[in-house]
Amino acid sequence: MKRILIIEDDLNIAELERDYLQLNGFKADIVQDGAQGLKRALTGNYDVVIVDLMLPNKDGYEIIKEARKKLDIPLVVVSAKGEDISKIRGLEYGADDYLTKPFSPGELVARIKSHIKRYERLKGGSRGASEVITHAGLEINTASHQVSVSGREVQMTAKEYELLLFLATHPNMVFSKEHLLSAIWGDDYYGDTATVAVHIQKIRKKIEKDPSNPEFIETLWGTGYRLTSDCRG
Image (cartoon, rainbow, N blue to C red; front, side, top):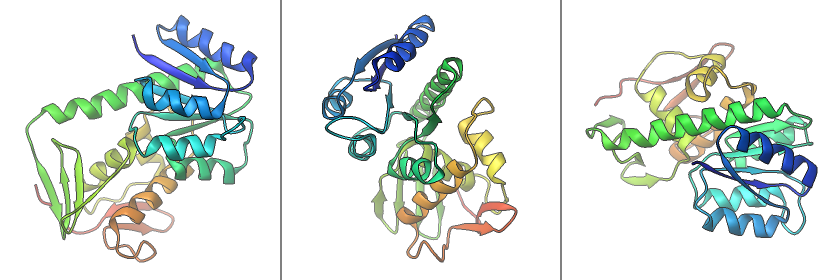
């Protein structure tokens, strides 16, 4: 049974999330304090963490930032803060998804299922045969999920890795934000394309010498993104 941690100080909302998750076969725990929530997230062996942003003792941004240093599991924000800047900040800190309150419990469950499915598929790929995709100093090992640039290993979240791998296995092909959102987050994902832009920005910060003048991932304004030149296996 998959285990979900809910870090939410509003008990009514937390119990609503928990009840819907349990009805769908998940085990869900609730923590109402931010500091305690982070501690549980790091030690509780959970499959997904759902976190509010406005919490006592430690806010959701801090939780995401600290958790992402040690966890690669899906982190999902559920918050009343619906402004774009809040969403972008949450995604930049390492969240995989962002739902705005009020939300549909059914939508939350659908997103959790989608994230778990894609995470397991990504992790399951590590048992396959090793393939190293290279391009001008960029290396992606599809068996170990390691990414390195000029011999320097780069740490990536599951979504960052999956997005980079998708572009690297389709070199020189241009993909719109909508296409990438569907390919990486799934057709049942209800988020907006800002998610793609934020993740591209995060990847560039990790692999590009100058993220403002990228060598690997090129933006074609009004069209989409592509990984430039040939990538060789």
